[in-house]
Amino acid sequence: MQFEWSNTGSLGALMKLFSSIIVSICLMSCASSKKAHVTMDKYNKDASEIIKLAKSNADKELVKKKALDLIETATTLLREYKTENPECNTMLNFMIESRKEMTKLSLEKIEKDFHEGEALPAAPDKCYEPKELIIHPATVVILTNVKYNEEGRHQIVEELEEVIAHTEVIE
Image (tube, rainbow, N blue to C red):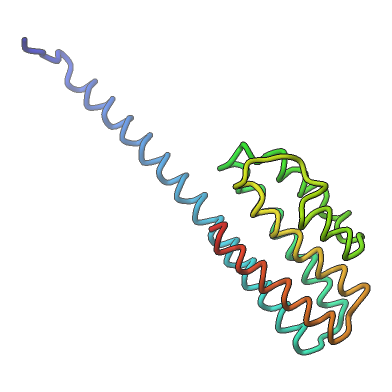
């Protein structure tokens, strides 16, 4: 059986359209992935900067401001993660909505409710790692309020070194 195309121009136009759609989808996917990578790089750079500030006994208000900024960068990352992982919407929306409240908790309460997860909604396992991007800098904010001494600054460094390790898992 032999097929003949009576209008090869239409087939050519259809193939061009199909190719354009495929290229557009690939470009959007790459752009989204690149944006998330750039934002994660910024997150890590900013977390490292806070580590340096804490180690140098910088003004606690500056450390707090930088930690609050890091929470906002994390919020952007969580929103991007949700678009690629819609099954995480409930968990990540909860984290985003709770971010300001978290900074006002006691160290014990943030550890129990958020880090250990007692206050968190149920979600697939892959949804739990990104929450750390908000919890650790929120803990830093709390530490600047209640324990900005040598021990507290050491704990700030540990919190941020731990969250940087989490970013490697999330990427």
